[in-house]
Length: 126
Image 1 (cartoon, rainbow, N blue to C red):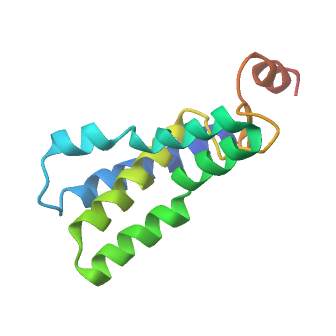
Image 2 (cartoon, rainbow, N blue to C red; image 1 turned 120 degrees about the vertical axis):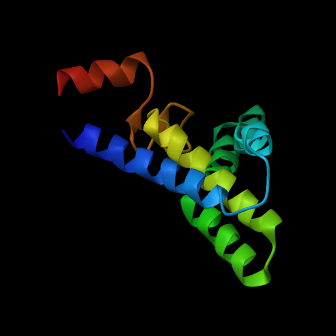
């Protein structure tokens, strides 16, 4: 039940990001083109688990996304607003799929639980 509740919450946040995007004067193709840009943070894993976790978490942290968006509102910068909404929406989408913020011991270890076969096995046993 809790898993479903959390997924519905993330879906709501994703829809909120999409709704707020409609207030900007950008085309939807730009939002779609930028949607997976936050995954550039995974390149940190080329330099080890710690660098990967830091890079991934910076590009998937909703607090940073909200700060960017609010800074854009304050500074009247639609570019900052767009960046914040893309990060926020992307992070919500990832969490909807079960990809949480990363721990330093490997990509599959997240604040939502372990990703992959081992994580599925542990969830079924519990």
